[in-house]
Each structure stands twice: as C-alpha cells, then as structure tokens.
Length: 271
Image (cartoon, rainbow, N blue to C red; front, side, top):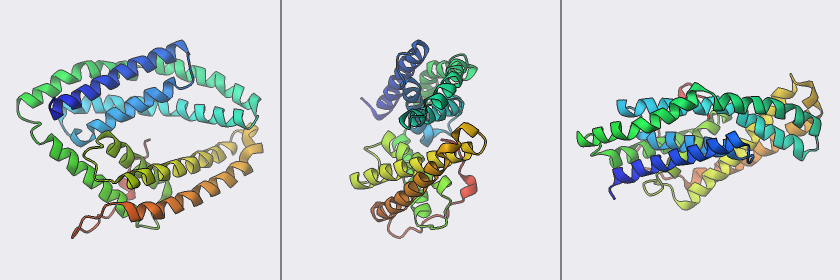
C-alpha cells in the first residue's frame, strides 16, 4: 500500500469512528462519546494540516474545525461536571447536566456536524483527483517539512521565558497531535514525545483550573471552590514549568539553523 493509500485509509477509519461516536452520543450509552468524537475530529485536522492549502482539502479541514469549535463548550462542561462530582458538589453538577443535555442535542442537530459527514463522503474522490494529476508526489516531503517547522516554532517558544503560557498550551497541543498523526516521520525521540505529552497534561490541568476560577467569578454556586482551584492552578503551572525545562533539553536541534521568532498573535486560541 502506497503512502497516499495509507493516508486515505486513515481518514476513512476516522470517519467510521465518527459515525460510531455520534451513534453513542445519540443513544447516551456512555460519557466518553463526545470526547471520542472530538479526538477523531482532531486527528483528521492533524492529518490534513500539512496539505491544508490544497483546495481539495480546504472544505474538509474547515468542516472539521467548525465541529471542533462547536463541541468545545460541551466538552468543557463535561470536565467541570466530573470535577464537581469528584469533590462532592452534586447539586452544582446536576444543574449543569441539564445544560449539557441541551448541548448534546444542539450538536447532533447542527448543520456543522452534518456538513462534516458530507465533506468526508466527498473528500476521497477530490483527493484522488489531485493524485492523478501528480499533485501528491511530494506529499511525504511536505509532511516532513511541516513537522520540522512546527517543532522549530515550539522550540522557539520553549526558550522564550516570557512566552504567554495560554499560547504555549495551544502550541504544545498542536505539536503533539501533529507528531502523533505522523509518528514514523516525526523527528521527536520517544523521550521528547513523552515529555511533550507530560507538558500538555500539566498545562491542561492549569488551564482547566484557571478557567474554573474565572467562572466562579460569575457563577455564585462555584465560589466555595474558587480558592481550592486557585491553589491547584498554581501547583499545575509550577509542574508545567518543570516539564518545560525537561522538554527544552529533548527537542531536536537543527545544526546551523537559527530558531524562528514566534509571534504569539499568529497563534489562534482554538483547541
């Protein structure tokens, strides 16, 4: 099987995973359906990223991005409900479960989700047409170039002590998901990949607690947890800073190449 064949097969397998996740979300069989749906969407976007400038890829990439944005509030609510239940704040959790059910319904009925499945059906033919015209001959090289560029950007951010940690979280996530989408082409060592994952986890924990503290300012029933969340946010950020030092030693350095300047304003805050 050629590289392009494997690439197409991977997208098709993710389409099947999306159908399965949607069915589970409709039936309410478990609490991981939306999370799994988002993982599949995220992986599709990561796979498409090196070739997102191709006109035949734009529609599918945009459709996946739309579903990602649409489902983020519901996923954030799921995580908060889990946190509230673990801490014994069952009334607060129950109140938000009703809101979550509405969120699920809106997602399932949304034009964005319908469009994603439509684009997934239409994409293989359009992509194969590019292959027939010889437009994918350098696909592997383009993926390798994208990986190196992304890691260079991360390296520059890691070495910038003043780089905004919210922006860094997004950059870390994008780098991890891109390298995991193409593990055989990624220049990261196993230790670097593990360190990147640990850093993402720490930054994610910090971000969650930071966001919950912000919500406690406007949602009065969350205020009893505000100080607890503040402490956890501080601890998580300290852990992230330690992980950051570890990662800095493990990222591959390209000889003779100056690290690029990273413009924070160019990083879109979209998970």
